[in-house]
Length: 230
Image 1 (cartoon, helix red, strand yellow):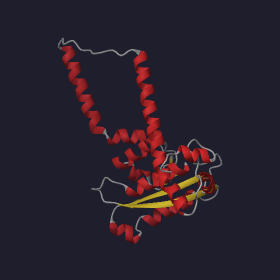
Image 2 (tube, one colour; image 1 turned 30 degrees about the vertical axis):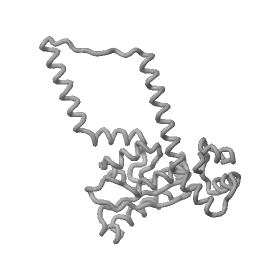
Image 3 (cartoon, one colour; image 1 turned 45 degrees about the horizontal axis):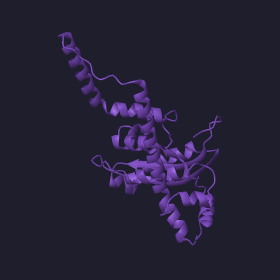
Image 4 (cartoon, helix red, strand yellow; image 1 turned 90 degrees about the vertical axis):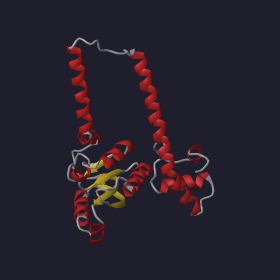
């Protein structure tokens, strides 16, 4: 993100995308994206944790480099930095992954963009589904005009509120499970490097600047709560 001074601040993970293997090998397009990111981060207090490059074709829907970038962002509570949102925004797979990740992002070519913007872009990408819905409403309106009785079950406010609370709880649990999954390889690597006790693992996580599950610094108790596999 950027402070009011206009300077970048915080932790970043850069994500670049090139369309073909040839572009990936030659750096065509990639160098321009890297230069744009460097210009964006010029000045301020920031740290680049890693840079990921996706070499893809238009036929592929999986984004392994994006998945790794998002996982690292979740582990460090970092911001995903993309050079060109205008190309990525037309990619439904990218939009879906970004929306579901819970990761904050910044776009060099569209610095005003935020998660709300991504929702709007996703709505545009699903234009056909919207058109189907509109045709359905038109058909219902025509049926009503013919005298057919329309209507259905009316939900009580309390019922809707309870359903919303349950859905919110499910989302929170899912995100907590995702974060544990992201942290697992990090903690395993720390243990393999020689950390034996929970206190040593916590100290290593703090040295790496990894926020604890609920923010702040790690303690031995928090490492234990991360799960038996940690």
